[in-house]
Amino acid sequence: MNIAFENEIERGSYSNFDKIEHILETDQRIFKENYNVRPFKLHHTLCRSGLFEIPEIVKTARSIIGSGNAADFLALDLRRESISSKFTEAAQHDRLTEVIDRLGESGSWIRLSRTQDYNRDYARVLAMLIDEIGTHADRPFRQEVTWATLTVILTSPGISTPFHIDHESNFLFQIKGEKEVCLFDPGDREVLPEIELERFYASSYNTPRYKPELQGHGQIYRLTPGEAVHHPPVAPHWVKNGDNISVSLSISFCMRPLERRARIYQANFMLRQLRLKPRPPGLSPGRDALKARLVSALEMADPKTFQDIVYSPMNRLKSPMQFLKKVSGRRVAT
Ligand SMILES: [Fe+2]
Image 1 (cartoon, rainbow, N blue to C red):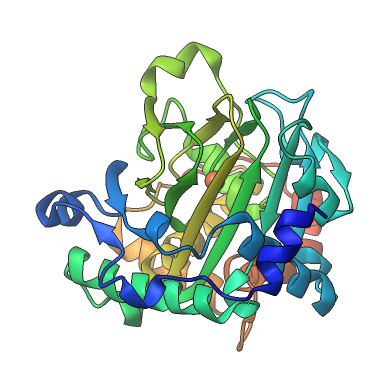
Image 2 (tube, rainbow, N blue to C red):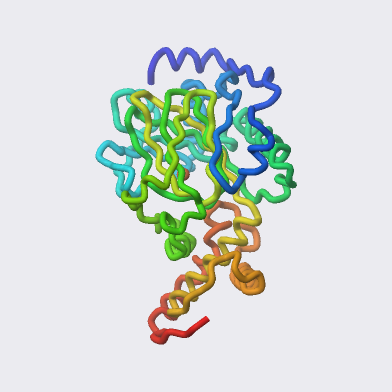
């Protein structure tokens, strides 16, 4: 541990968060028109809060390690990876604070998950953002949200985050350093074919394939401290850090309409296993409702985690699905 960091932590909190009246600085019309549909850039005040300085992050990391919840801390060595690599291919580190100390020289990607459960101020940031997003989006956001989390991401100079999609609605806030985020239209079916969405909703490990020839379909957003970019749900993206240490904050939300669409994709995945050609969500309200209702019947009654919320029907079906795959051999029109 860096001695200067230790001393700052010992001095206690140096937060200015109480002086901040709002977090988001954005044009309400642009926000409302594009939220959950298209990426857009906005500004934020979190850099002025003092809450995401390295010592405060280290303090939070220590709480995570002390809790024994290993899944809430992940450190990857991405030195040899590229934007087309999958997360699962990267080797893992296991000593968070040592890796943070060496961040400037090593090839690290560090993620602190569910930080709102380990730092009271981070929980306040998340609550404030839920209120503000609801106001800007002009919708009953709080009632739609089923799961929300605040993730802190630290990256070494030049590190890339592989091409992938996320189920959640997301905002990425830049706190320190610069990075490039390349976002693709979530409705671009060349970049993200229906079949790849179905596979993603069958298992989160099924990351869509990066297609270099379609890179021109993406738009690159350069983020500097005080800037943020909205990632609509399932918008394909990759991230590349600048020649600097980067501290970013990711706020993610699961929402009822997104889970309903996930159920339709999960139904379509199963239908495709039966050699059918299912209709994508949005083309047939009646079929969508039936698919969503049938797959929702397999949801856990009281989901606690992201995996439970999004994937519990598929996890419950895993064995019967393998059976169906074996016995089905004919193509049926739908
Ligand atoms: Fe992501």
